Image 1: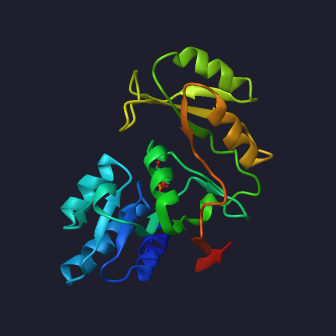
Image 2: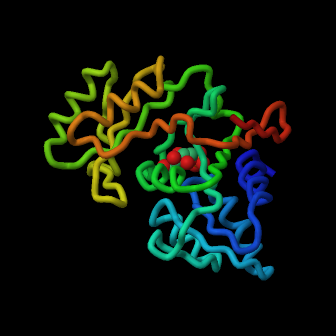
Length: 221
Ligand SMILES: O=C(CO)[C@H](O)[C@H](O)COP(=O)(O)O
């Protein structure tokens, strides 16, 4: 079993019958969602809130009932991957372009569990270019303002065309090399008009499931 599958399936042990589950996006969350599908086929009543259209399609394929925020009072547990994590369980997310919905759902969940293979650990965040979602209007100006914070922003492309998020926005991948203060950077970025949200998830993860020396390990705040 590969690391993504190990951590993705382990997280499902936190799901109980009747729960509302935030469903992450990406190749690690894939294993969580397919395992949840197995539970559903075994009679579990699980409702899912997806963090992307891609995840919504996978969840439906797996027989998981999808719900909207208006249908539920709370999200019991959200499970999602990460592009980087540090020792304080701060994260960079958004490699799959779903950071806005991922942050809304992680923030709404009573428990946010992060699943990440061993390659995602970092002493300092920032080697992975930070995804920042921006509105298309004024994108060139927003890009300049973000660059003034000390990074090289690159418009994410699909082929020759800008990548468009599920929310109709662009993503800038911002190479900071390292981010001294993730909290400060998160706030600075979100103050720039045109920025919708950024992929720094500071102090949000309750539990990290990862791999060290080939073994599953779990860390909490
Ligand atoms: O933030 C994300 C998507 O927006 C993903 O969780 C992140 O990119 C990790 O992906 P993967 O599990 O495929 O490595």
